[in-house]
Amino acid sequence: MDFSIHVAKVLQIGGLEIWITESMVNSWIIAGILILLALFVRSKMRDPEKVPTGIQNVVELLVDTLDNFSESTMGKHGRKFSSFYAGLFIYILLSNLSGLFLGPNWNPEFPLPVNFMRPPTADVAVTFALALITFFMTQGFGIKSKGVFKWMKDMTEPMVLLTPLNIIGELANPVSLSFRLFGNILGGTIIMGLYYNLPWPALVGIPVVLHGYFDIFAGVLQSFIFVMLSMTFVSSAMD
Amino acid sequence: MDELTGKALILGMSAIGAGLAMIAGIGPGVGQGFAAGKATEAVGNNREHGGKPATLVMLLGAAVAETSGIFSLVVAIVMLFANPLVTREGAFIVLGASALGAGLAMIAGMGPAIGQGYAAGKAAEAVGKRPKLQSSVVRTMLLGQAVAQTTGIYALIIALILLFVNVWA
Figure 1 (cartoon, chains in turn blue, purple):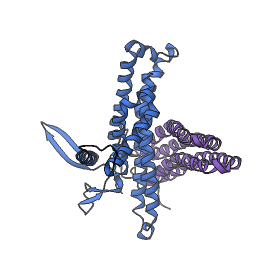
Figure 2 (cartoon, chains in turn blue, brown):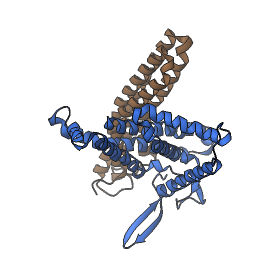
Figure 3 (cartoon, helix red, strand yellow):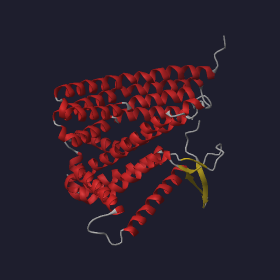
Figure 4 (spheres, chains in turn brown, orange):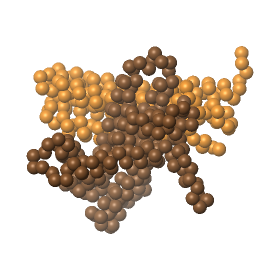
């Protein structure tokens, strides 16, 4: 049983070893698919119609839903951030669901050239990078909208003695944010990996239910929660 | 009777650890029971309009409250079937104690699960009273439950570090 992140290739650049891991390759694949999809939609919608039909209808519905989501969570700041958070949401959602799709195989012990992808979000490096974006956005937009002095003064609220606790609290946010996503997706990956090692009569039908809960329910819920918490952190730092 | 080898010590400690981890199951049980009770109450009070939304919200909240139980299950199953400590080099007592500690850490999952279940119950109650507010109630419930999960996540981090990372190498 092998839940570890496989290394696709080790590059040697000027004496430095650079490891290209499975998570990196899989997230490039996901990003590539999203870019191709975006270019396809763009070429289809060169001259948008007044009354939407076909693919324009679907895309407008999607964009509208995501815009409403960020506006209702972030209030008056929502509109500005909605394109970023919509992209983040779609990326995390696809990463969480990628375990259901085939991708290149990097496991040397597995005989076939293709294998089910290991979700990139089951790698703490990926989720921590996403959480760090949120952390720097929180601090950056906080300083931008409040000014440095107000931002520093807010750190000493409600009393000066609590400043270290406030700082620890700020630093703990990206940790809990990243490990929430990582833990849930990794848990699903481990359970599914262990389940597929059972003898074959157990593998008829039941995995559908398990995938439904661990991949689809947990995947959708965790991407929703990650984006919603990130929105809440940023918009509350700006007020 | 076999003699006490280092590997036997690790396996024995892992067995205790796996059992201890599952104690966390108390949490989801209490929390989901509370949510179920509140949803039942909501259905009883306002079956025509609030019954279905309250049941839906209860199921969603209870599924989130299950997370801690699943984390414990993952740690216990890893210790039983894919124990990474068995093949590791190091002092056997330390490796065995790591298994025990990983199991003990997971007991923390009780707290988040009870809290999340409480939130789910209150959300079911609110939706039963005012079914039109379902989407905003669900959103607030999920946000609060996600924050309540934090300490359980910390416990999972420590348990996974104890199992997979060679801390004292």
